[in-house]
Image (cartoon, rainbow, N blue to C red; front, side):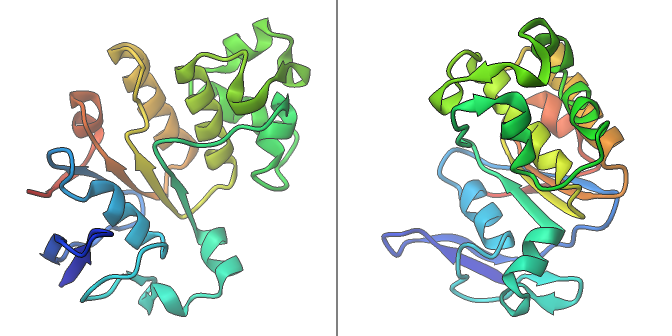
Amino acid sequence: GLCLRRAGGGLLVNGLSFDLRPGQTVALTGPSGSGKSTLLLALAGLHRPAAGQVLLGGHAIDAWPEDALRGMLTLLPQRSALMAGTVAEALALAGPAPEADPWAALRAVQLDEVIAAKGGLAARIGPRGAGLSGGEGRRLALARALLRRPRVLLLDEPTEGLDDPTARAVLAGIRHFLPNAAIMIAAHRPAETDFADRIVALT
């Protein structure tokens, strides 16, 4: 029974109900302005519903301690900041990870060869990802999200700017890296809806 309002007070989502289970991918579709991004924020506990509730593991999302919630759930918005520094430093913001994990995450998002050609994990990037294309910077942020190994992964148009074969390879890599995660994608292209097990449509 989830109801969400936009910042100006207008109703965006009215009486929405669905579940998202481990290992399942759900695509969230709808026209621009239908509330896809706002719904992802609500699922992440970052937007208060006007009515209804979001449950994670049977508990209300706002009842979770912040550290525990962020350990369980990761949201990658449409625009993710990258600070100046090395690739390794950008990925390290995900938290401690086994030594082999950075390259595994880069392979999952089809970025390993690009980073290797730039000098590997020691390669430097500038503020806001300068030195990487828009698609490369977005995939680096996605690799960082994967390294958190969340049980719930929320992605807002994750393949924006990628050609269709690369988009499909990245989505397959995400699922291979996180085989048991519950994944919800705010989808805007066939590669993302084809990847999903189920579609939730907003109007």
